[in-house]
Image (cartoon, rainbow over all chains, first blue to last red; front, side, top):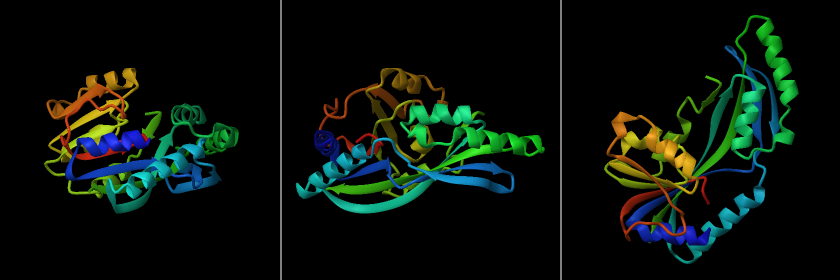
Length: 138
Length: 98
């Protein structure tokens, strides 16, 4: 990871900006949502490999201590993924290394179908906490 | 649509707050299938997306975003051995790739 940061620094112009966007380890929310808003929600662990996040953070700190970059900005944001069914959410979770065992697929699908049977368009929403950090090349 | 990612555009908006991206030549590391690239590329002069996952990067290169033809390029490359000259880019974006 430090090698990648060193390469990023090499190809950046003087005073160029490195932007790092990544998931954070705080819990994410999975919800059943209808037109009026969420009708059921549960917090679940957001990432299956918190050690990867820790290693990435350590690499950034190493690059800062080597004075390759200077910290500029940090912004936390939540990004939403909407899925028509629990099966779709499972596909997304597999592709993004989400901790599938923690996601209550059966309950989500059961509640989604209940609302659907009552004539509401119900979908599932996964609200993921992410972080944008930026650094200026020294 | 079965899966809809970030319809509010929160992620590209967050990225665009990182710096003044107008007229920047951008390198995106971990571009994958270009899902994120095409959402912010209109703001930049040009962008090169790289990823080690060849099928995904091929998919990005084939995406028919005519508006970005000539300004967006995709390559299969590794972040630890970038096939670019020194001081080529104004911005490097690590897209969940550390």
